[in-house]
Image 1 (cartoon, chains in turn brown, orange):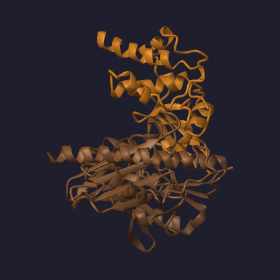
Image 2 (cartoon, one colour):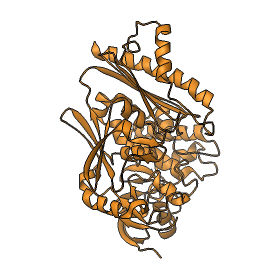
Image 3 (cartoon, one colour):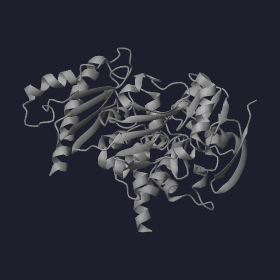
Image 4 (tube, helix red, strand yellow):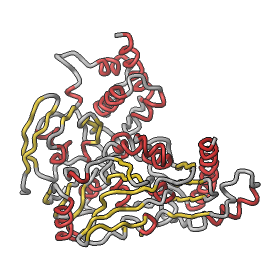
Amino acid sequence: MHTFAYVRPTTVAEAVAILDAGGRDARVLAGGTDLVIRLRDGSATPTTVIDLKRIADLRPGVREEGGRLTISATTVMTDVAADPLVRRHFPALAEAAAVVGSVQIRNRATLGGNVCNASPAADTATPLLVFDATVVAEGPGGTRRIAIDDFFVRSGVTTLQRGELVTAIELPIPAVATGSAHVRRTRRRGHDLASVTLSVRVDALGVTRFAYGSVGPRPVLAVDDTGVLADPAVPAEARSAILERMFADASPSPRSMRASPAYRLAMLRVLGARALRSAIEQLAAGSD
Amino acid sequence: MAETHRIEVTVNGLPRMLEVPPHHTLLDVLRDDLRLTGAKECCLVGECGACTVIVDGRTVDSCLVLAVEADGCEITTVEGLAQDGSLDPLQRAFLDEGAAQCGFCIPGQLMAAHALLAGNPHPTVAEIQEGLAGNLCRCGSYLQITDAVLATAAEGTRR
């Protein structure tokens, strides 16, 4: 591994100043499950690595305030998956966090890191999209709140600007009853990246939100507000046209080694239908 | 030569003060500086789990942790399992069940299993498989490893 200067700021302002000064030569270190691999294989060659884990204001944790959940960017997947507030209000996010990597990876990988790496296959990206999350970024110009759908550009690229780092993810607690589910397809059971990763959320007002990843350069959000998909009484034929529209933005790469485009597109529909059933059942059970 | 950082860690109950360059991983320091060679260097991308150690009660792939990040942490490696020359019950069960074939992955398997049992003393087979999913065994001893964890859990009940 090439060497670099390791800095451990204690305030967000200090971290932002170092990040801004370093520009492309500075990298933020949270869990390290992606960055340390890239430092070793030479695909990232920063001169400065900024460890966020000793910043008091970025301590891991989940808090509820003002009708929303705020998850600190440094919260690891193990804790996101186990958090009672996340499980109660955002079950699909808890499910997604629970299947990232292995136990060892989940004990280190952070929610902020998963979002900032902007992998098309990031499992937590799809629940954050269906739950309408906001990415909170701190930078030289102050705080910026970015809708998650405006955050992802393509693999490894986000709309973060120079000197900005993600401090938290905010999730509005749904005002109406909702059901949600996360599902994924992997080559093998256990520790693997997803060939398709998908979340869905239905609510009592009849709105259905799908988000899917690993089938294009960035995760995609698709919304149905006709009420058709959320209504289990609607016959399958009536739903299929809308479902097709939901999945129209999938464009899997033919060069990926994990699965062919045809397989991914077929599985997207299977998983979509399966997740939708689970979410509708959850909504019905919660409304009883 | 890179600037080094002074870190203080507790390794298997012993406080250690070390000077580490920023680009050395926890695995490098455990193996090369502390001569604790139980944790193995293998895939170096967090897929195989051969380098698993426990940091502040949680398993990590030590190849993906910079040593300097571990400053102030409590670390347990496979060398810390046996007490006073007696094998830990989990190690004993691995031997009894024939779970250790070539042995290369076993330190990592033991640490993953140790952490699993600490949080869940009576795991189901599915929970063991999930808990150890980050530890690959090229000899394919998964059944024996699972049996060893089950046997340790059962023994814990008897004691």
